[in-house]
Amino acid sequence: MDNVLTIILGGGRGSRLYPLTAERAKPACPFGGKYRLVDIPISNSINSGFRRIYVLTQYNSASLHLHIGRTYNFDSFSKDFCEILAAEQTLRSEDWYGGTADAVRKNFEHFRVERPSHYIILSGDQLYRMDLGDFMRRHIGSGMQVSIAATPVSREAANELGILKVDSKDRITEFLEKPGPEKNIDGYKMPHSTDAERQGNKEYLASMGIYIFDADVMERLLGNDKKDFGKEIIPDAIGKVKVGAYTYRGYWEDIGTIKNFYEANLDLGSPRPQFNLYDQHNPLYTHRRDLPPTKINSSTMNSSIASEGSIITDAAINRCLIGIRTIIRAGARLDGVYTMGADYYETYEQWEENRSHGIPGYGVDEGTSISGAIIDRNARIGRNCRIGVDQMHRQDGDYEGYSIRDGIIIILKGAVIPDDTRI
Image 1 (tube, rainbow, N blue to C red):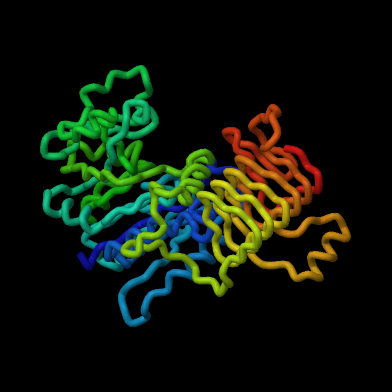
Image 2: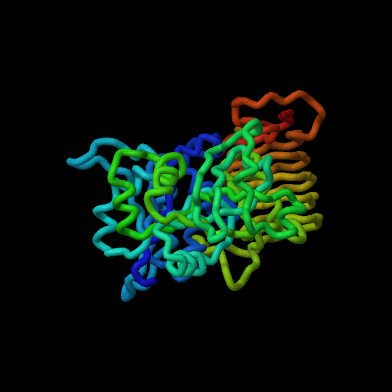
C-alpha cells in the first residue's frame, strides 16, 4: 500500500458555514480550540499510514495554505508529503474547479507523477476517526474497484444523505441521493444490520463521502465532464464497475452547518464526548505553538475545555470551548459558548490605548454574560454586555458585528462589540 495517494477536498465555498467562511476556506475553520478542520482528515490519513497527501483548495485559501505549510513538514529524506494544489488556470483550462470530481480531474497530471495504485478521497468538513488502512485492506480483499465508506443512519437522517442499497456481499446495487420523507425506501434497508441498529432505527446505509478508487478506474470514470462525485460519478459507476460499501460504525458527523459545527465543538468538553481528543493512539495533529499553559484565577468551569495560552479570571464557564489566547475577565459568565481565541496578545500599553478610545481588549470583558454563541477569532467584547442571555426575539440574519444562524449568535472575526451591548 505504498503507492496510495490521499486527496483531501478543501475547495468548496462553505456557504452553510457562513459567516465563519467569510474570510477563510471551510477546512481552515478553527476546531476544538486549537485545531483546524483540515487537521481531521490529514490526521486520519497519517495515523493510518498514508503519508502522501494532496489538499485541493480554491476559495479563501490563504490561511489554509499558511496552516498546512507551517504544520505538515515531513522528513526530507522520505517520500512522504502533504502538499497543496490550488485551483489554477492553465493552457488547457481557464476554468476554476466546478465540483469535487472536477477538482480531482484537473490535477491528474500532478497525481500521475506519483504512479499511484489507489486514491483515497476525503472530505474537509467531517468529524470522525477511521482506520483507513482497514478500509484499504477491505477494498483490496473484496476485489472491488470503488469502495464507499458508509454509516448506518435513521430514516429521518436518510432524507438529506446519499443512501446505498447493498447486497449480502456489500456490493452496491443502487444509490439514492437525498430521498426526502415522502419516498418509500424500505428496499434500501441494510441486509446485515445489528440488533442495536434495528432498535435505534438505524437501518439505512448513508455515504460518508469517503471513497477508495483503483487508480486506473478513477481516471476512466472521470474521463468526461461530470463535476461531482456524490451526485454524478458514483451513481454512474454502479453497474459499470464493481462498487462496494465499507460499513463504518464509529462516530461520524458532517459539521458543514453552523448548528452541527457548534454542537460538535461543545460536545468535546463533555464527560464522555462522542469524539475524544484525548486518544493517544490516534492523535490530532496541528501547528505547534510556543504558548504558555492556561491560567485560571478564582473561576469555575464545568464540562469545558480551555486551550493553551488563555487567561480566565473570576469567571463562570459552563459547557464551553475556550480557544487559544482567550482572555476572559472578572465577572464574565459564559454558557454554551465556543470562543475561537486570538492570533496574538495585546500588551498592557496597547490595551490601555484602545480602552481610552472606547475599544475593548481581545476576548470577553468584565461583567459580560454570553449564552449560545460562537465568538470568532480576534473579537473584542466590551463590559457588561448581555449576548444570548435575555428572553427576546432573535431573527436569523446578518447584523453589525454579528450574525445569527439557527438561533446561534456568531460574533464576527475581528468584531468590536461595545460596552453594554444587548443581543
